[in-house]
Structure formats: structure tokens, C-alpha cells
Image (cartoon, rainbow, N blue to C red; front, top):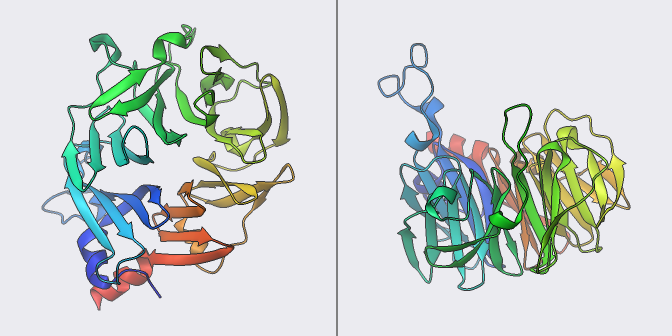
Length: 341
């Protein structure tokens, strides 16, 4: 049983791949859909003789889902064009809003029932907060943070307005000619923030200054979770995961996966982790694959946790976990079959 109608699926998701998700409130979720060019007709894209289209050529759908509306009126979408790789997060301060931001710093905002495409995040050379691409958004204490290329960090301060922490974070020149990057950020509060990225780099903010954290590794780090058990979990290549705080860290898992974790979030009594290959959890210092109900595992890819709800969304569909129970929002395979019938 799906939580949306076939008509809602056709309008919002048919022909689109789910690439991110965020919880706005206990009753309202957001999903980002990116046009699936492999389903284009040959007249639009000839796969045998043409390279795949660039990401900014694909339409993006910013999709809202309301749990409280009746089926048939639960899902709606706004379309944006010219947006490249897009991520989404929801903030509560200084205003309650959903933000879709691209790697290049394009910004779509949805607040108080009004959708708008903003001027975009200014680059470092133009006095802006980012000296590289935007890699992750995260709500900390209700404020949306970003982290990105060349060790950039910033916060959302209002409509079309961002504050940069980037100037306070080291960005050492590399001997290999490549660039530093921060891939994830999380915090217990605005006075206790961690961000992690290339070559085992981890930085901590205490509300006044940013300092680099001594980590027992130099692997690329992809995911951070400041957890409800007062520990920080940082994961990287092949899912290898460290636990600790400050300069005291222990490796709790030597990963053997093909993909690193994309998202790590705290929900109820454990850390939840996902990538396109599945869902795991961390409890009692152990990483274990989650035993999900039939079909739910196919929705892996992206996680969001807020207001007592865990949201899982990926190429296969979307579901949420609350009070120990999974609820399927929709299955792409089931809905797609119904569209064709």
C-alpha cells in the first residue's frame, strides 16, 4: 500500500531518479528528483552516438510530501532547470524553509508557501563563503550549514544570505596537485561542530575557533554523525568508521564495501548509515547491516532524521521509520508498473 496515488507519482516522480531527501517537520518531507535521461527517446538523446547529457541539462523536481493530506493530495512539486548536482536540507532558523543547493552554489528556497530561485551563493573570489563546490548541507540547531571544496564551510543567515567560516579553516596546498574538500558536516550545537573530508582531515568548531583534529587515518572521509550517545562517528573509504571526540578516536569498523557511506544520522538509539548499496546501523560500537522489511532495502541511498522520524529515499522508492515501524511512501517499481497498465 502506497502513501501516494498513481497520479501523484506520474506528476512528480515518473521518469525521475531520487537523489536526496530531507525532513521539514514530522508531517512534511522533501525529496529531490533528477530527470532520468536513460528514458529519453532516441530523438532527444542517442545513446549510441552521443555522450550523456550534463547534470545541468536534467530537470530537477523539488517534491513535497504531506503525511496529513488525503491520498491524492499528498505530493506536489516545483521544477527547476539549469541546476546541476542538487542536494536538499530544511532549516528552522532564521526562518523555516527548505533549501535545494547545487554543487555550483545555485539555490532554490521554499519558505512560507513561496518558492524562489535565488541569486546563488557567491564564490570566494567574489566575497562569498565558498572557495569550491558545495558537497553537503546539514541542519545543526535548526541552522543550515554547508561544507565543500577547498575546505569551505558556511551557514544560512537569511533569504539569499550566507555567512562564511571558510577564512578560519586551513586549506594547505597539496603536493599531488589536487584539491582539499570537506564532504560532510554535523554538530551537537552551533558551538560544537565537526566536518570531515580528504586525507583524513577533520576540523572542529567550538563556537569561537576552528581547529584541525588529529585523526588516526589519512583516508578520504565521507560522512559525519554527532550522535545522541554524545559520540562522533566519522566514516570513509569502504565504510571504515571511527568513533570519538576531540583528539581521541577509535576505529570501530574496517570497511570492505565498494562504496563509502553517503549519509549517517542518529535516530532513536543508534546511528543509521546508507549508500546506494544498502542500509546499516551502528550500535554498541558495531556496524551491522540493517534487517529491513521486504522491499524497504531497495530505497537505500539517502537518509534524513528529525522530529522523531527517519526518512529513507533512493532510486527504488521512499519510506519512513517512526516508533519502531517502517511505513512505505512508494515503491518506484510498483508505481511504474501501474503507470504502464
